[in-house]
Amino acid sequence: MKIKIPKKLKIGAIEYEVNMVAGLKLYRGNWGEAGYISHTIDIDNLLPDIDRMATYIHEALHVIDSEYVCGIDEDNIERLGNGVLKIFQQLGIEFDWSEVE
Ligand SMILES: [Zn+2]
Image (cartoon, rainbow, N blue to C red; front, side):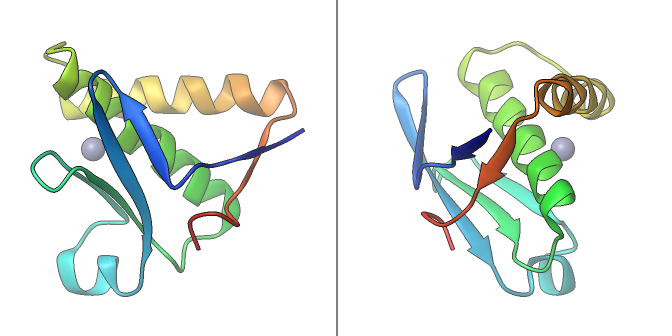
């Protein structure tokens, strides 16, 4: 099942704009970034689909952590992200990026 990733993801009271960014890894050193001031989730546009999905989940978890003041550190965001990805894979869920490319 393909799920269309919306251009804006609302978490808590705030909408985060999802962007595929050229050169994110090259110029800023990250495959993905959550911008808590800019309200953006940026993902490097060169990532293959599975890594793009993992990065989107990871950055969305950072936003959840921030908006709901969970206090989850980077390592645990990574672990949670990997777990959520595994669940989605077992459910046969794939992401459709057509709205954010
Ligand atoms: Zn992170």
